[in-house]
Image (cartoon, rainbow, N blue to C red; front, side):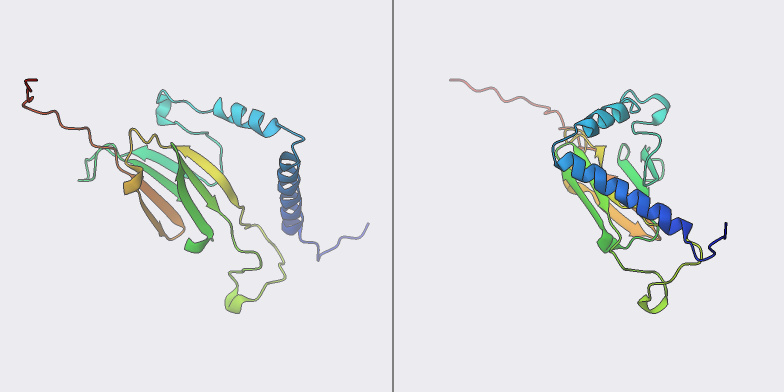
Length: 182
């Protein structure tokens, strides 16, 4: 058997991955399968809301993320929720971040045909280990009764998206209660 030196194994597996994603999307949209809901329920079993180990989100996911609450020790707002997403290779216009109820939704998709090669040329790869996986509607719990979603701050720098959501300020108790006579 002859070895084909021009075969791009990275592109081969990328095509398989893309075909599997297309198949799942078409299968779900066709109404043939409710397995996606069962998969999400299984993923939810990996989540813990009681704060054990400080991890409220699934342990294995893409993109890689750090999620933490600030302590205020560095002069910042204590109790702010911070998300750091590793999105190397993406540009700011490739990223969509929004809130849907109590969820922050992250999506990122590299524009097709766009290459990081010089002068926009689409290269003929000799080896391809780096691929850009799309991020499709990744949801993170940000309860609106606890966090001021309207004050979110997002900074994208050097392939790292940092999203900071401050806590809602507790209403200050009134010192004096007015009494009406009716």
